[in-house]
Length: 229
Image 1: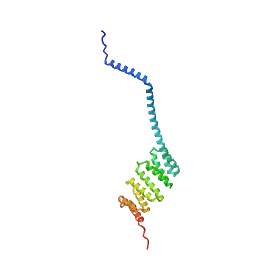
Image 2: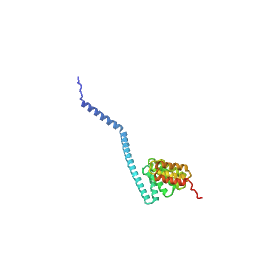
Image 3: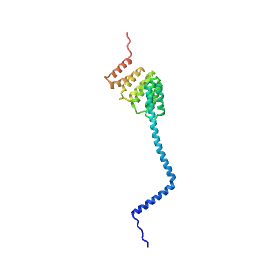
Image 4: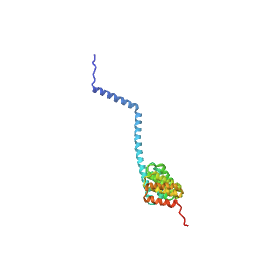
């Protein structure tokens, strides 16, 4: 009778490995097309990610460059050139962080050019799209108020000044917004609302020149001057 051959643990492992290799080769042979396609898809995905990251970095750099160029033109007094450059930042780089600054600055330049309707349009666009910077949001509201005041729309101006103060009540210019609201309420003949703004100034700035100046303005405009007999 032929005796059984007992395999060692090492031989068993080697046989299993050999079987695994042969099976794997067979599976590769049968499915090589799918494996190649899968590999190509993976490579393309990696290339797409790298390209997108590179493209985004390049676009951000271009947006920053254009904004810096627009700022330089504005500071040099070339407002029309600055408007064109900043408009390009908004149009071509709307997702970049410089677009919010460009949008605000477009309103500022239009205001300085006394194109008040355009200034209001840009500041309203800024307020609708950007919500993070409370200082600039308050300033945009105050800009809209100033544009209305320049056009004689005192009631609308007063309301926007009040909104500016409410947007950033602890901000460094809150007192100016309250004063602007009071001034325009007085011009619109809404004395009670003007008094509310004066009260807000008193609560925060009593005893300061800020409040004293506002109180003098209120007294001069809220009460009709007495005529001499």
